[in-house]
Structures are given as structure tokens and as C-alpha cells.
Length: 437
Image (cartoon, rainbow, N blue to C red; front, side, top):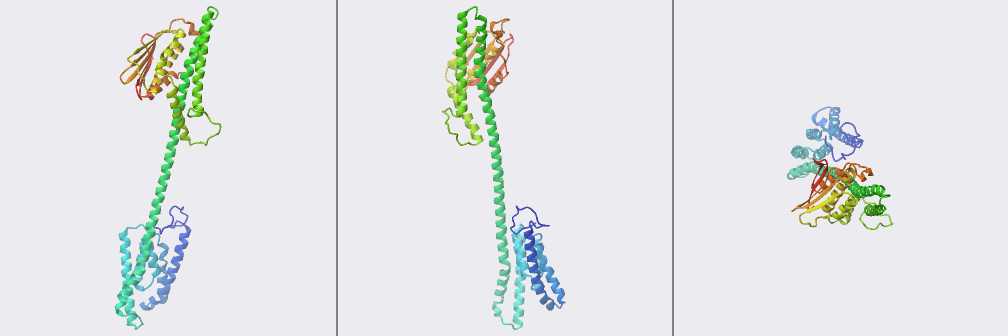
């Protein structure tokens, strides 16, 4: 199927090979005009050929009506126009047929060959017609101008429609190419938008997971110690009032520390960047920007305000205050590491001690920290808990997220995490982290 520049993106609503009914009306009108022209010229053709006039008129009408199939078979229309050129009819058929042929997507060599044949036929007919007029004595130009007249007539009938058709066909292909590029860009933009949405969803999930880990570490450890102290307080309240007062003070300190850490974390979540929230409601940014900005702000707040390995002694001291026997040993020369590494190492030890409070209250625990050349190793190992312990009545709940959170933290920094029971009946948590991320 060939076209003459009609919009191909329009829905196919016309019959047969027409895209639209407007094309049907245009081709029917051109075919009617061409048929009328050829029918009128068929009268002279019938007289010159010695045929009945109705035969010549019918032949002209049939040949001129070939423009109806110009969009479907442009080669056939051009061949018909070439065939009736000796009969000196079909000027409109030739012009429209050549234009349609040139505007089609046929190879250029076929277009050039048929255009050359049409030009040659028109040139021959123009020469014969001019010589006949001179022979009949009609006033005309001199014989030396006959070739010039014939060439001009042949070029005038053939060249303009061919050039116009080539231009329209090239322009149509250019427009189609630009439309395809626009569609391709639209699809790419849609794909990028979907990917951005996926990345935003991933960022939100990662942020939820990180916040859940932080909340678990802050709440679980502090509250576990508070519950242990409360159980000890209950056990010694009547026997040793002085020790009860001390345990009550420790519970208050633990609660205040937990509230402080929770307040800092909630402040970061509310403001998004650690600064004071403004009363005005800002313009709502894109969804992906919100997720990434929240993740970046929370990460900055964690790096700046999070715990470090220098506070490990205090952490171990808090567990000792509950009556747990905890040994801390440090190997290698202590040095500053990146904030993420120190905070992760601190949280691993903190969560491991929390698990000891929950599942092995009263068990002796060994905390080991080793500074190596390019990494930091830590290990928390507890012995089997005693048969009976005063703090065993604390009944601390467990959600099963502690080990999962530790593993996620360590693996997120490219470290190694191993946990499991020991041969002696205790439990061991080991982690190795790179010194710099």
C-alpha cells in the first residue's frame, strides 16, 4: 500500500485500501475529472483511428478512471498513462500518476525508470504532433524550434509532479521518523518514571527497615535493662532497701536515655534534615525525591549522633549494673573508624547483650573487640545460664528480629556475620566489619 502523505496515525476508517473517507472522495473526484478529460479526447482519437466514437469515448472513460487505484497500484496507473500517451489523452492521469508514484515508498530506480518512460513517450508524441501541425499548414513555430518545444513539453508534464511527489514522500517519511522518535522517547520516559517509582519504593522500604532496626536497638536494649532492674528491684525491695533505691535510680536513668534516643530519632523523621520544622507547609516534592531525601537525612543523623565504640565501656557497665558478669577485652591498637562502622559494631554488641538478658539471664558473658589492619572484629559469647537466677522472672518478650537486624547491618557494610550455639551450651555472635566503608 502506498500513500501520498496522508496521516498514517489516523485510524483506518475508510474502505479497502483507503485510510479515510476523505481519501475516497479525493480519488473519486480526480478519477471523474480524468475520465471526463480522456472521454473528451477519445472522440478525436476514435476519428483518427477510424473507430466508432462510442468506442473511443468508452476507452477514454475507462483509462481515466484508473486514478481510483492510484494509492494501491501506482505503477499500474503510470503504465496506463504511458500506454495512452500515443492517443494524445490522459494529461491529468499522467501528472497525478507520476506524483503518486514518486510519493510512494517504491525504490528510486523503479520511480526513475517509469518517469523516464513517461517523459520519452511525451517527447515522442510532442514531436509527432508538432510535425503533423506543420504538415497541415497550421500556423506554428519554425521547424528548428520543434525539438525545443517537445523537450519543454515533456519536462513540463513529467518533472514537476515527480519532484513534488519526491518532496512530499521525503517529508512524510521525515514526519513519520520524528513521530516514531517521539513515541520512543515517550516510552523511555515512561520506563524511567516506572524505574524511578521502583527506586522510590525501594528507598522507602530500605528506610522503613533501617528505622525499624534503630527503633529495635534503642527500645529493646534499654527496656530490657529496665525490666531486669525492675525484676531485681522487686526481689530486693524488702530485704535491701538501699539496693532497691539504687536499682530504681538505674531504671530511671535507662528510661531517660531511651526517651532521649527516641526523641532524637523522631525529630529526624519529622524534619527530614535534622533542622527545626517550619510552620508553613512546603510544596510537595516528587515521591522519589522525598524517599531519597529522607534516607539521606536519616543517614546523616545516624552518622553524626549515633553511638561509637568509645561508649562500649559504658554499654558493658550498664549490663554489669544488672548483675550480669560481663568481661570486655580489646585487642590491637584502638583507632577511629568511619561512623557507620563504629555504630554498627556498637549495635551488634548492644543487641547481643540484649539477647543474653532475654534468653540467658545471669549467664557469664565475654565481649571481645579486635582492631586489625583493615577490619574490626567483635564477638559476644555467653556461657550457659545458671539453673536459677533472680532476674529470670523478668519474662522478657522476644520478637525474633534481633539477629536479623544485626545480619542486615553487617552485610550492608560488606562485612561477615555468624551466630549460633556453642558446644558448651551457650551462644555466640561474631561479626567482622571493614574499617572504612
